[in-house]
Length: 448
Image 1 (cartoon, rainbow, N blue to C red):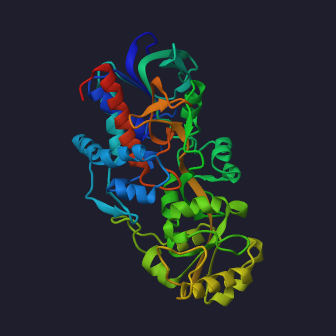
Image 2 (image 1 turned 90 degrees about the vertical axis):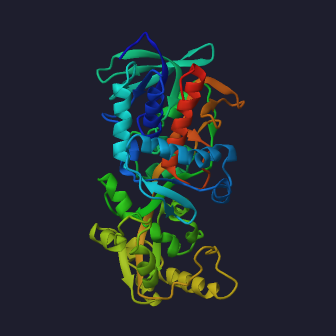
Image 3 (image 1 turned 180 degrees about the vertical axis):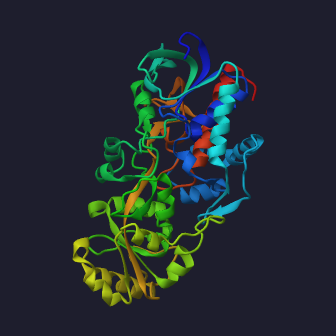
């Protein structure tokens, strides 16, 4: 670890945003140091499979209307260029497929991409990858961020001076206190569906030099998962995620519906977090099971029997042959069975009349094909939406919306891109990582 040289770009965080920014900048003439807290790079991205977003700005505005359109445009405009860069690295990229009801994307060999990015940095003269290292603070010079103080795995402190510093530490999904502060008081106990080292280092470092926050109240990206299960393997989450909740109904511990479940499971997770005890029963009928649970959520991904998997894993699961059987829900679950039964019956009746409240805007079919399947679910967080305020060039802003010279942010460290909506976290990381690299390259005169 070199202390005295001034490098072009110091990247803090070795997930998708940090790795892509470091590799792109290094391959275009910049001197780069990539600092990662863990023993290896990859972050949460190594467990994912698709890079996707909306195909147009209009589609983005429809599903993500509360976000800053100037920030979301970076995803829409940068998506194809980003994939072209990935392909240029000889990384396998699949054919485009539909994702959710509004997106398009491709399966990508993400472990291969992350490893290739690491190799590019390591093999480029004047560049290095530093793992098992902690960033203590940023260095400043007359208001300009000028590097960072880094502790290596032996505890030795080093000053790495840089013309630009990129914060790409993955947000604060693993920080219970920050989740409770910025998401919801009950979020402190929420299950983590991502890397355990995403504890808000980027937010801390940015705020210490005057960065403003953006996306307050914007929520988080996550999904509903079966309760009463101990999750050990990161790959378990995708297998057990109840993506099909948008074709069932959710009732809280009072036996009442509380959201339009049909908009998306990722939004159902946010809504469930706000319910008493942050848990709910997911109930769906045989038609929903056959049509949605037992089929591929995204084209090309093999379907998994979520109910059977949850049941075998010890989750709270039940099958009711008719609605009346909900009156006999296990009392230890803590749900009023008759209220649950009446809620479903009332919803079914209302569909043929004035419509249920809350609405079922994207799937108005009644749940009237027994048997009924029931899984208790809880929200799990993948990444957080509040983050540092940035502009479309990935430059970090202060409370007066002025650029903090020398400081960039990407991925989940950048706030304001998603707000109570979701349109591709890996695309956010990749496009903003590349944008941050280009911002630095433009300023230092590197080739692009």
